[in-house]
Image (cartoon, rainbow, N blue to C red; front, top):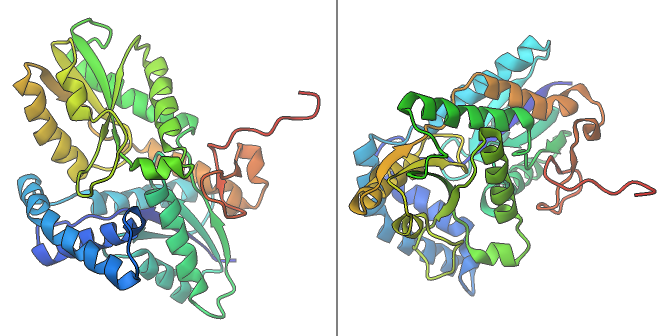
Length: 354
């Protein structure tokens, strides 16, 4: 059996090319078209193009400021880390990277696996915290692309939420601890506030049953505990492209109310540096913080930590080796209602007598 592992990702324009940015934004808005009412798919696509053209100038400016997004090469490097980790375990696989919103698209990666003769495909979203428009949507796209290839006898194993992996938690805690030590900062100093910044999500998804905020809150609590941090704040990076409700509080509003001298910001929703970290935080949030007299410090994403390859290898190991995923605490995903989608997030079923 030839096994392929598809690392599912967001994708971002590596350069501030207008046509590429508009295509990218159109794909994002269309992916979330159900947030607004539209009578037909054509209407939804036209609305998505309108939103994309309106948002494009600001995003192009951001990409020009940061020199383009490094997300794509970082995701390729993580695929290499995974291959290396599995090779060290005596496992030979092919890895593929598929992006939801830009080349190489998920469909392209699936086609590459098909052409390579893969007969066992594992889908692994590289999103630390499971969300409907990221983790769930990416797996849906992968399975739709597989189904579109008639006659392909391929076994598919979708893996969803994994923020509870112990080594992943340690990687994130270590990244913060190392940063604090380097900057000689004490998170328990009354003048210093640790701020977790999470990618926001429309409350529409939460009302439909998404557990994203639950995951964010429990993850932040765990990381703070590992660090011995007595108190912290949590804010969301929301986007106002549509007139809809988003998760609260906005991180920009949060920092305006802080009684502190400085903040240390950790972007908990990301495993890559991208526009949301390099521009929204390092430029825009820094300006907001300094405007109210706060010193600003931002923890780098540990995207190239060599241990992350081991985390990814652990996540696919039961499916590669063919043993019961429950042995590694995988259970049926609650966020994606498709049988066989396994995650580390679902609560354990009570045993008899408990």
